[in-house]
Length: 258
Image (cartoon, rainbow, N blue to C red; front, side, top):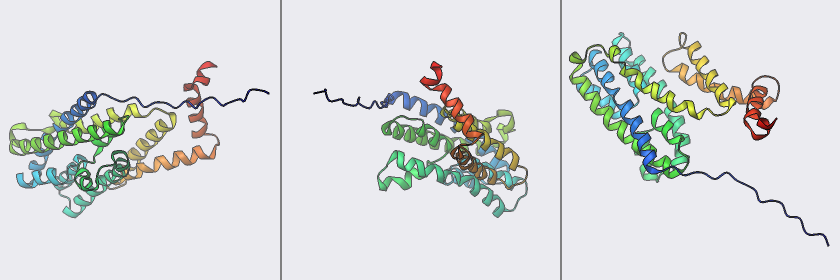
């Protein structure tokens, strides 16, 4: 009787745990780097006519830098307060999409979710999504959120108090720290050609729509890049699907062996 043939066991990639100390170090680096840009917000807000109390309340309650800068920038330009608030709102909507993904990844107890929602921003999402395990994701989210929240509010107060002494915030370049750090975190996560094409299309949409749409809307419109790329890839025709498949095949073991 022929020996019974058995299928070879399925080999699954094993998730490599990341040391807690490494997660904390990375999270602190992001929190400190971005938290310093609260100086620029404090100075800008005070220069726009807001009181120290109003400036600090924005950082404590809103806590999303892009929306805060949009609000005080519109007010400084003489815009209507309702229009300024609408621009800030549209920019902040993207955090709701982060929350949908982070809620599944972190799986926090129900009682902690309203508190954690306050820390769902670009930087915490980027650090959390980069972690290989749930434990590392929770540590990264907590350390980044706590560090950034404390520093952002302290530097906001310092900036508002010393607005005249600090002078032109553009000379400091602190307002560029937050987006620069976020892009540095995002770039290594774009591993496949499909992800890179999606990111490139999103950038093109933002730059193209920036002159014609109100503040905040181009960022939301950039979200259309993902379904467009997935639709083109799903059709299996020429274009994005072929480019993505060819590049990914070249990165696979079979592609490298050819």
